[in-house]
Image (cartoon, rainbow over all chains, first blue to last red; front, side, top):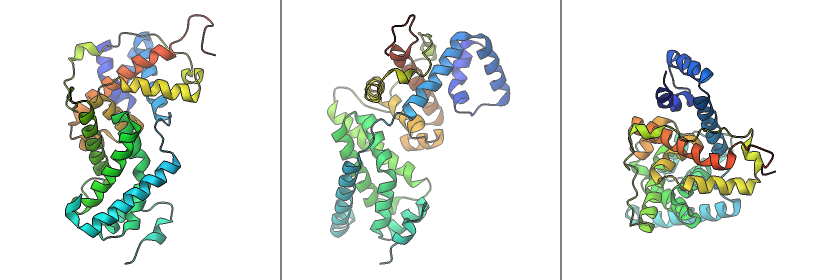
Length: 85
Length: 209
């Protein structure tokens, strides 16, 4: 497997949707190609860091305010009829 | 009208049960759907619009649109996927209004395969995120993802942050599965490379400790 082929399969590999044969070839490539090993490892870390980041959490007070505004508008919409959205 | 309020207090009420109750006019069921997905819609909206007030508007508009069009929801996909599709469209519309000089589309041309080889292969320090405070880290992550084209960051957020499957992401964005995979790979590699500026292993003891 060449580095470009490894890269082509990287997303499937990280997502665990890769056939066994390709996985063996890919892991064999990773065992000797340091660059691809680093790319694979740091890409995995990138995903984990974003997943765990709690970026853009909705604060509880804003959440309550938004929900209340949404439900009020929904009720107004119901009174006005279905053409009003 | 009979509500399903009592059932809502259980740990998990099936999404479809809520949707059907809401279709029958049970607003408490719709409110539970809002409660269930408002955080996700807000995150997705802020990732796309990069603006908190716009994200708040998108949350309201997306749920209101979902409410108004509930009878048209055919139940062939998950309600959440349908809602995400509405929210993404609302968010992209906001972005287009703000940046009319630049077309904002999910179908942006992607470059040829040849440029996808990462240029920088420097390794990161172990647990690189621990070099920074939570606030610093959020700033870095936010700044970094803002640098991606909207089409890339939307795919990344839906797949890797919100955990939608490739097929659900494709359905929500009206893209093909190969297009989602291609954008996801590019988004992941670009983010990795950009984060490397902050997380790279340092040669000597000059880390951010």
